[in-house]
Image 1 (spheres, rainbow, N blue to C red):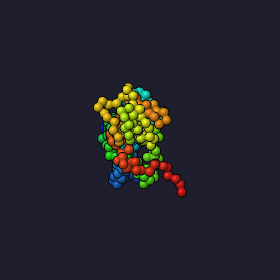
Image 2 (cartoon, rainbow, N blue to C red; image 1 turned 45 degrees about the vertical axis):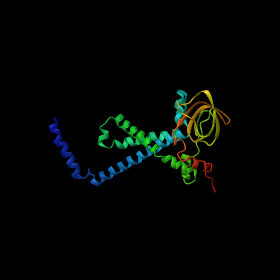
Image 3 (cartoon, rainbow, N blue to C red; image 1 turned 90 degrees about the vertical axis):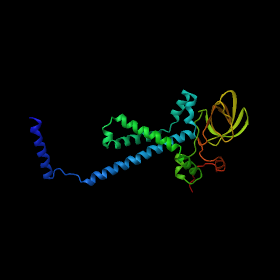
Image 4 (cartoon, helix red, strand yellow; image 1 turned 90 degrees about the horizontal axis):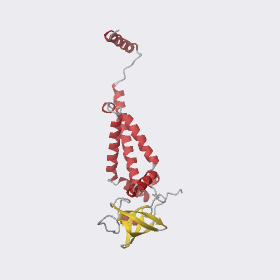
Length: 257
């Protein structure tokens, strides 16, 4: 039987099913409502990806592990082990959900899977970079410390530094001389940093009070023997003014009354 012979039969069967009520045509509002739901889902999931990814970046900068690769492969390993895997897993799940939603659109499902995934990852990376420079997480971190945002404690609570990581981000509070200075780490600890002749410091950089730096080196009690000192931009760790930071009460977990 040829295609010409079968087509009329298929058409007749479809029309017959519609007339008999076995098949019902969906109303126009159904497709409009479905399109709205998909678009809303894409928007919400995209916001979720950007928020969580930028939060990961913020947390890694706060505890200094974002800068760990500066010390080579050992630092790469430290960064990998220090990743907040629950948040990373959340991003992966969001990306999968967004991929499923986006492929409801013709422009997406006609493209290879890797193309649409690459587009989503690229969008997330760019948006994370932009959000990271808005100071949004810094504002929420500050509000959490001041007690104005108690719900933020699980995300913006104290930033314990990884044990034996030999990475110390913080703010220079006092430059004693050319061979030592006092560092207030992001966890609140006050450390004395000793600089040796072989300590690596960027050429032309001069240590100054209130500078944000990352110190790489072995620590013992309140002393750090610096191997490498890296200056960072002024909003690298605690993105608000120094005088505000120093006048803040110590961060503490909320207590039940």
